[in-house]
Image (cartoon, rainbow, N blue to C red; front, side):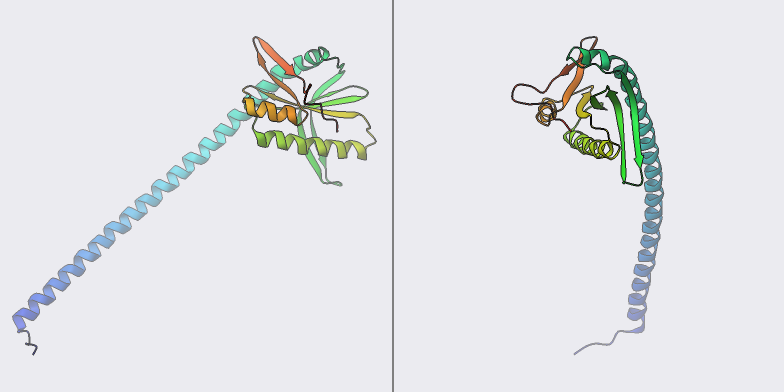
Length: 198
């Protein structure tokens, strides 16, 4: 059998409930303030990360340009040691909307019957090598569309070449260009590997 609360007991229970509700409301306000502060901090962090990404991108581009400007002038001479005579060397960009062919080549060395397309990376990765294979295929299609029957060859240049990446590039038929002493050396895919022609 339930006993009825007296008015003082009821008031005491009611006061406790109201106190709990006020405390809960205060805690919810605190939580809301914390969530707003966290959101502000996340926005600030996001802005900083975007700025860092932008600066890193600029630095990477500048470093890539610097590597290209150091490597490009000496490439022709280095390839002469491998019995190539290139008469033209430049950076090339293809934008063929009609045939949907878009690509860039860091260094394109040319003569009357051969073209060497060189991709330059700070630290080449397997994906970079696979991307260069796709680039070579685009170059071949573009050349065929324009009646260019020259043989296309590829090379990967890197400031830091991992052994696995170097072997992978050689297996794919690319010449590998890497630092050596004061300058750089070119490793030809030979013996069990062969230069790939596109």
